[in-house]
Length: 70
Image (cartoon, rainbow, N blue to C red):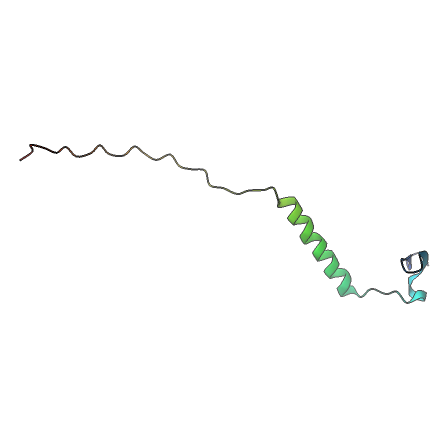
């Protein structure tokens, strides 16, 4: 059927995958998709940067006078 046809890289031709014995378990497909999504999100966020906007600090208080204060 059309749904089971695919490319056999070993023989370099299109074959019926079930008849050729080429079957991918669902877990392999799921892990491959998860890894692909992980790499894609990494590439998308590589240039992103999160920072805090620096707050402007108030001027320091003037120094205490010293000298003949007693």
